[in-house]
Image (cartoon, rainbow, N blue to C red; front, side, top):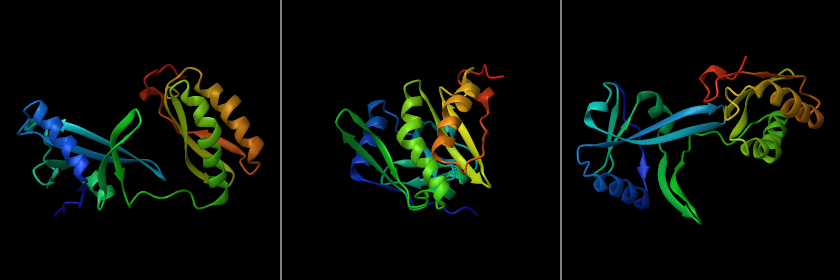
Length: 194
C-alpha cells in the first residue's frame, strides 16, 4: 500500500494554484506534481492542471487545504517532506520546490570541479543556444554526461562535446581521461544526430 507523501504548500503557492483553478472554473480539477532525477544531484519538477479523466489508477491524492494534488508513486518517493513555494524576483516568477530529498552536490573532489566548471563556464555558453550538459557520473577517469535542451539531438552535438566541452574539461581537470555522451539524441527536439 502506498503512503501519501507529505507535501507542503506555502500560502503564496496555494493562492496561485487556487487562482489558476478558479480562473477557468476548474472545480473538479487537480494539480499534478511530478519529480524525476535529472542527474544524481539534480531533480526536475513539473506542475500541471489535470481533469478527472486524466487521473491515473496508481496516483496518490493529497488534500492540500482545498486543492487536490495528484502524485504518481515514483514522484512520491522523491517528494516526501517537500515544500512548494511561489516566488517573484524582479521579472521572474514561478513555483519553487524546496526538497530535503534532493542531494546537495557531488561528494568527490573531481566531480565537484567538473560540476563547478559546467556551472561557471560551459553551461552559460551553451545556454545562449538553448542547451546544457549535466554530469551523470565520474568513475576511474571516465565522465558520463547528458546533453539537453538545444544540444539534445543537435547535429553539432558530437562536435560541441569533443571540441568544446571535453577539450575545456581536460584543460582544467587532467584526471578526466574520457567523456562519454549518454544522451538519447533521438528523443531531442532536433533529432538529427548521427
